[in-house]
Image 1 (tube, rainbow, N blue to C red):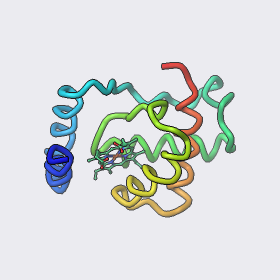
Image 2: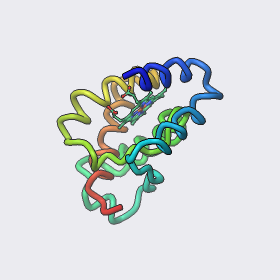
Image 3: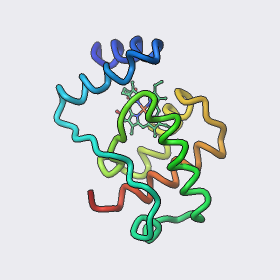
Length: 115
Ligand code: HEC
């Protein structure tokens, strides 16, 4: 808990944030991997049009990646991503509802791709 609070404080200062999260990841066992770009295999798992999935990917790269590397969505249940994680992360990223849904649709497709 205290580690998470420290990271949130670090995130107030954008520049130190990425470094703080890299340290956190290095010290934990959670593997980080790069966000997979939108591709035919990824679209095979998508439940939204390619335009929305692509938008979700772009928002991930520009907004979510400011704070941390891609968090493998396969580590989380769809209900957890939709109901708990994305509402919090969308607030952190100041996303509107449409952008939040685009990122969620992208994560739900990406979580089913083999790493
Ligand atoms: C302002 C910084 C910030 C932004 C922007 C941000 N995150 Fe996070 N994220 C965090 C921090 C800090 C944690 C770890 C602590 C926590 O769960 O709040 C985290 C944790 C996560 C987790 C792990 C879930 C968990 O409960 O531990 C996922 C998945 C995630 N973020 C996805 C995203 C996505 C997707 C976006 C873009 C929509 C995003 N994040 C934007 C700071 C951020």
